[in-house]
Image (cartoon, rainbow, N blue to C red; front, side, top):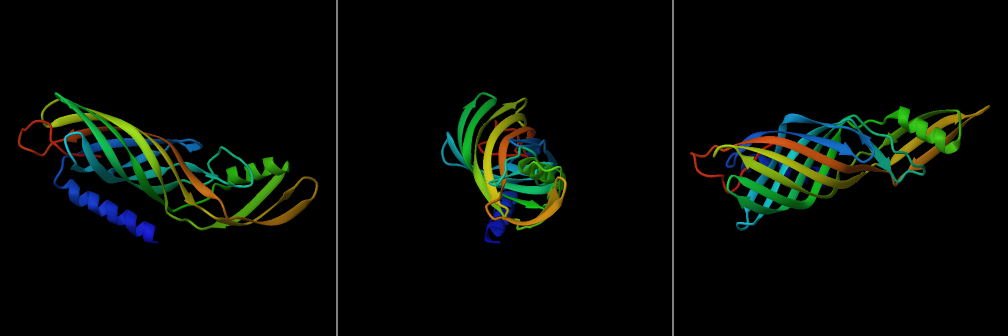
Length: 238
């Protein structure tokens, strides 16, 4: 619960800072290492909000709400590359250090840091889960039933962003980040199955974790609310 409150606080902070910065619209897409292609929920995304430490360094934060199509669960007693949870809504809040390389009408940022996330409306994909258990046990039939504890997670990320200002007030940004995160997702339940005869087994997967690892691609348009000055010191969008 403390981690969830911290995520909410960071998102509110991002929204308040955004009022004094640039604004804009972007679309971010997440391709998980093991899972399904996920799409953004615009305009519920504010990223790159923060302050400059000096000309070349900045601290940024923000928040994005994703519609995750499906994510994998790792540290199970069997292996699978299919999505075990989803679809759901996932709130992601990054905090990152940015190296800024600015030119005339162009900026290239190298960034890295940590992020927190929480999945809302979590559900188990029983089709993929039953298939993975059936393959592991070499059974013909499996029917499972599990309960779970959904908890906040965190991880690390690194990436780069290129922004080209087509006018003094409008810029186009392209960004790519690699995310490596996880959240505890202990599962408890049972499954029934077999070949010629059926049996029921009670199991507990206490070490199970949702795997939020993959690539995030973003494209956005930045609007400067200033009065015609050159590209602003600190901005942002999404």
